[in-house]
Image (cartoon, rainbow, N blue to C red; front, side, top):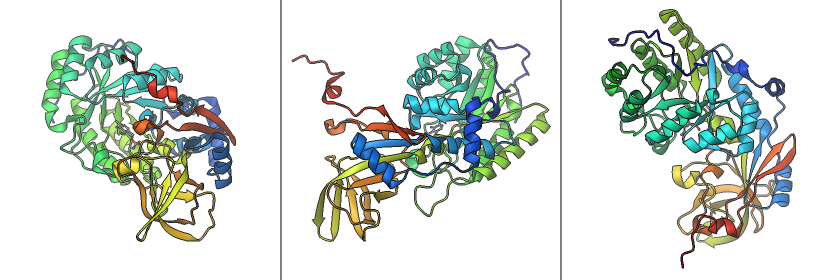
Amino acid sequence: MKNPVRRKKKVPKKPLNITATNSSAHPLSVIRHLSYLRGMSQPLSPEQLLTIANEFGTPLYVYHAEKITEQYGKLQQAFQQSNTRFFYAGKALTNINILKHIRSLGCHMDCSSINEVSLAIRAGFEPGNILYTSNGIAFSEIEEAVALGVNVNIDSLSNLEKFGKKYGHDYPVGIRLRPNIMAGGNLKISTGHGNSKFGIPLEQLDNILALIKQHDLFICGLHVHTGSEIKDVSVFMQVADIFSELVPDFPDVSFLDLGGGFKVPYKEEETGTDISLLGEKVADFLAKLSKTHQRDFQAWFEPGKFIVSESGYFITQINVLKQSGNTIFAGVNSGFNHLIRPMFYEAYHRIQNISNPNGPLHHYTVVGNICETDTFASDRQLPLISEGDYLVFYNAGAYGFEMASNYNARFKPAQVLVINGKPHLVSRRDVFEDLLRNQVEVL
Ligand SMILES: Cc1ncc(COP(=O)(O)O)c(C=O)c1O
């Protein structure tokens, strides 16, 4: 590719933070990291979950802080050979206590709305450690993000042009590209393919370069998020190859953001993305790129699920058992208003009857109480269920509570965070007044 952009000598007003590495962690994280290496994080046991359910009621989301620490520790270890920064994709779970815990580990935060940026600031993330990756947003949100001094990735030619007109060379900015790669666990979470709305299509590279030239833009990073639940390391490396090709066209680029999307194992027999292998490959990629261009590059990642999914447990209780032909419906006191992933993405969540974990196995179709088809699991083998039993959905930390709603005028569940074995209520269950809180009674 031809490079129409001359290397800029001017210094932008916003300082670049490309030297920060994962060693910028809070001192406490080192201790936590060591505890991860000693393998101290045990999943919450059925007995612990039962005690918590009895204390706080159900439906209830429970998160395990040590598991989050462990997951971040795995990333640090896998990528220790490379200059890589991790930005937790806050959209997975934004409870302020979770954000504060993640910040204390030394992880940074990726945001998908200006409100998430404000939450990140409230949780204590430094603006330089916050990334706002946009997706079809109003330019006014980009202006707000710039005023707060956070990193921004722009995902449309239209906003890039507005950005150029307003900030020119003064504020370094990243560009979100669409790589035209189909990957991810489900079409609804595949964002990089050729029909996707996300990012600027690669075939519009000339338009991007023309805007850069016209407005003397300072492009400090390139970004691609191909999708969620990507197991295959080679998908990330395909993006790395695209970056290698593009770098000559972007002489100011210092970070290459490969997005999020590491797969976590939802089914017993599944394995997640091999992050150790990915870490090695990214280290090679950065080393080669630095050698070729005689300057340093940083890899950025935005994992959401990988950091919080396995830390989360969703506890429900059986309201009714109903026999219909050969099917036994086990109806829980919840629905897709609280955990939408099975209905939205056909997602699988492992379920356990923690009231009777050793009971004889039977087949159940686990359903919610919402007034549309509301199936959590079809024909699932579970230990004998009685009304009143507690069912736990595992791996529910990411996109669980965060996507919950008050549909059918049901209350959103409470959330509990377990730290060092002690459960803390971190958001209370709705009460009736919450349903009316924003309503304006005109009659
Ligand atoms: C831009 C971007 N980055 C990161 C993520 C996080 O993905 P995951 O939770 O699969 O890691 C998403 C998910 O939608 C995203 O859109």
